[in-house]
Length: 292
Image 1: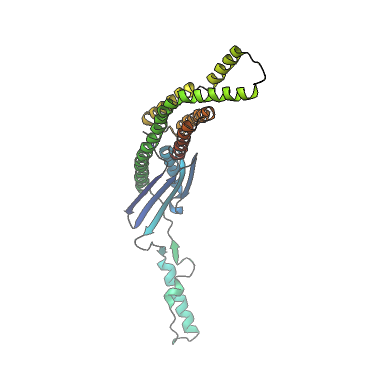
Image 2: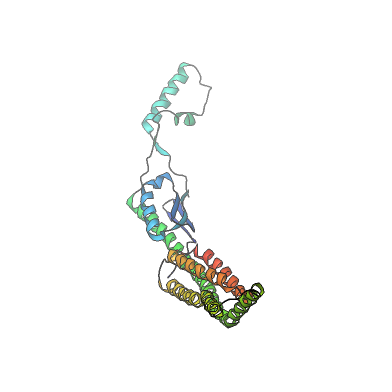
């Protein structure tokens, strides 16, 4: 089954006192273009998240963000009570020596800023939290993959309809072919008669050259090849996986046959169908840009 390169994933969960949010947005791109935003606290699992993304999503412009929201203020550090009491006693002695009994400063805010009073706590990412975050990330990836499948389904339906329009136009051209050849033949004879009224020419040689010229203008082969390309395109898009590049190559071959039809046609009725086929093919190519 084909997949679109467009996809979105959003998951939220609470671990201990943290709300963790994962957001993934994918757009089309020729290769994997991964932009990841992650808190420093989770930096050690960034490589693993990149590896999961590369394996599961393979192509596309991917913006990935992982955010933390603290439900309660994090503990900035541990209070060194011994140091706190030491500084407090020292300041009380200094207050007495300087006879500042009536002076009542905010000792607490002063003391907590003193060296070694507050020891910062270095938080570490344990294995349990790693697994929790990676599981949450995988849930977001799964959402992206499901979105890609649904998006691709509507894209494929539209693309197949357009390929079928091109195929139907091949049949619509057929009724005009006999008259087209006759018109070209009569035009050549008329032009020749206008320039050769005073000149003799070999009528047998002329007939041979005319037949050769008309054979060169025959579009049967182009019609057959174009129909084969249409059938191969539909077969590929319905049966193969991640065939975006292959489908693009097939569409290029379809374009060559349509252009040859247009250049050989020399008929206004046939040209109308050729223009319609070109228009449908351009829309197909635009849609293929978003097929993985």
